[in-house]
Image 1 (cartoon, rainbow, N blue to C red):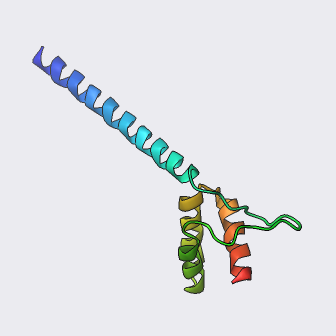
Image 2: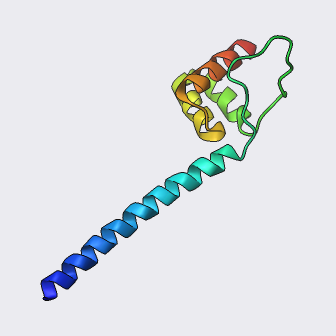
Image 3: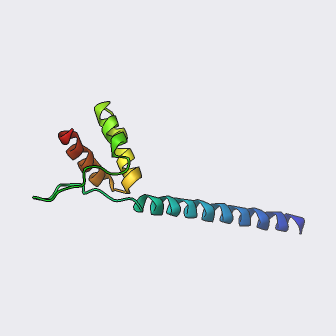
Length: 96
């Protein structure tokens, strides 16, 4: 009987930890979506804002030759997909 109580407690703990991890991941995604998201590819004759929150750090990474880290930072800051972030970093590298 005591083993059953311990087993149920362990199962409840595992379920709670799993739910906590999922909620944390969702909170991080929501936080990333709250910032303005730059366009991955420039549109014809459309003016883009001159800077975005965190763009200076992405530019610094590009200048240091750390393109992969710049793509990762763009995904983290703006919630972009991998393709969008790569296009964004490539476009930004051409401008600076």
